[in-house]
Image (tube, rainbow, N blue to C red; front, side, top):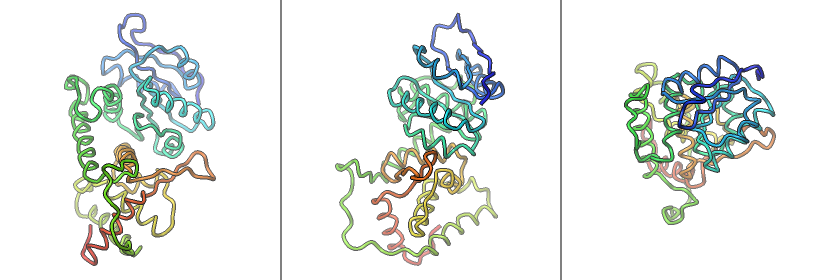
Length: 307
């Protein structure tokens, strides 16, 4: 990581609201984040990644903590990520982390709190949306923005994300089978769980991917189902699935896939397991109830075409 990133401030002595605290791995990375904050008319301060932890000791408040990372900083990056996760868990600061897709596994291994917004290989619009979600998360909690976002940059993108989050919440309300919610969890199905052929699941996945040869892939985006299929395939084949592989299987941008993964984990459909051989990677698997439901679904449809 580049320790030479200079301190940058926007309106540091004149603003009346807390700043966005940006910690970046280089001047270029700092510029990507600061341009979004500045475009949203928010005060910001920018420091190097090495300066972030001491800075947090004296930072009274912030609109958000924003990490803009370009490369793997190893153990030092791990310490920073653990601190950001702890800050989110304590409700002290909302947080955003933007990074290349190559860092999705080490970052996902350290960031467990659902209130940290993750952006991988994101566009400026993705960053603006993450900043908006982080700022307003406490006020709307997926139930609607309490402030007028139409004056913010990329307002159409933000409205699209709001609609997407609402759709995720509605879908999961129907699918929720979380083991930690006994009052809402259905009674276990009676009878043995049907066997499902590994080849049958692979054929379904191949058929879904084949559609992209004839139509725009965005027309059929269904990351929740694609991830369920991938995890069922892995379960039958007794393979482990890291976060990066599951995001690829979702066939949507990584940031969207992570949003679904996060929410489905919270609903009890997915479970995270630490890699016992690599502390910087986590695996994802179906929960017992989700596995049971997938097996019974394929048992019900039999040999009918499922895509």
